[in-house]
Image (cartoon, rainbow, N blue to C red):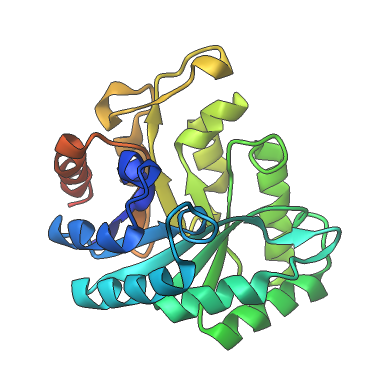
Length: 253
């Protein structure tokens, strides 16, 4: 059965109020989730958060809840044709927390050499983590053309770098999520699930509860392999988190 998890963006109102992610992990475990994804921007440099303490508290909460942990880092994997020089820092943070995967933005990975990609593979292996890139909402890292080119370069190099497919983000780049899924299905190693209202103007776009949006997400998640974990990754009111989680759990059953 496909593993189902929660990205802490689900609890955006708590994060915005300075609630540490380490205190959110028990809630995720209590839902019956086996996976959680924490976000670096709410650890390092976040108001009121001592990152050094929080890394260890997240590690303890992960262990106590029996959670497999993923780590979202809003930085590029490569820049100016080379690996981001901070990758070792991110991977060390992941290892300290017990995270198994680190997600990064694409950067210029579509243009880098195979040697650069193999170097990233080796560094990730040294820290015991896997790595994925994602289609985000930016013109630099979120268009279909850019994402497809990045993934083809990774494939041609024989790199182990995987792909976090974000279903809802395509709408922010005026792309078709269904067409993107059909074309990139074979590359997907992690799936971020969100829906949106489909507004024509980007400034009017907003995430919705899963069954209130324009994307037929059930049809797509049914096509995922059992080895592709699914994460809810959109803000949800506190009194609806369990409902949204259970809707997806039922769809994956």
